[in-house]
Length: 220
Length: 132
Image (tube, rainbow over all chains, first blue to last red; front, side):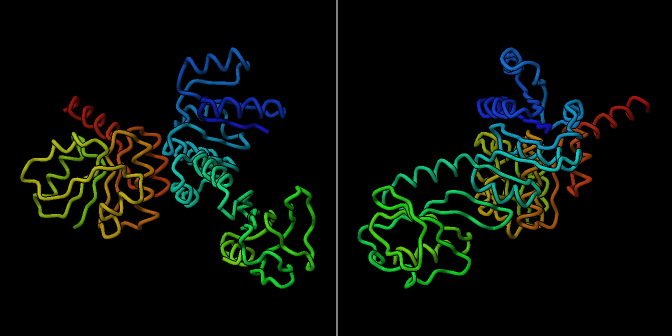
């Protein structure tokens, strides 16, 4: 696949490395001449100097034959415009934008960007996961299907400890996929499985029902 | 008319003053407090410090009741993003933005943004002046 990356900073650099290893054709568009030089000396001529929002630069980069266009500069507005130009001027089928401000994710989606990645939101989620009192963590979101995979921790003082799964009313379209017990042994939950303190439950749910699922499993 | 102007540079401040004189309700937004020095003491509108790409700041500026939104910061992309937020998220009836880059302006005009390129306009004016 031909993949164009706008922004040759740390993120763009390692992204290019990974994609090259997977035998993709990669081009980095970067404003800073010194950064372009570093990339060229380390990875070969896979980088051009220019503004990834400019039509002329994108034309030179052959954006019209790109399969994926990824913008990972440090500025949200630049990532938005670069992706919009790629999408609407060059008809790139898939555009991916890095978003610094998590609140901008919804806006980007409304404005036609196919995929947004918010580093801030991801780091927050990881940190929340390490806070012992936080019962629900998002593991994976399959956005185009409206489905997400979450982890729910059963606290020792939870009202549902000792309850069988068949006695718990789960919200519609929520499925318990896996339980990892205190002793790190995983098992596939059955209706007879009894919830125990410190169980970690991996479940499939939707953004609308995740609160109901958490309440059902933790009793609070 | 209630107007929110993002960017209180020379153009933004000038526009704010003109509209204020005609008794429109003007709110100017800028990320630099020094920019507001361009507004004279008799300016009756509001000056709000903050980033116009932030929905909360836009709400504070009264974008939900605004009749018009103008984006005239120094950054083309910032103007484009703010104008799209005003138009597509807050449904402001009249949204105008400045885009210096003529090619980018053409693209966003095609996408339905009311955008002006001072570069094209001023070059045209200079040409006409030369020929007159």
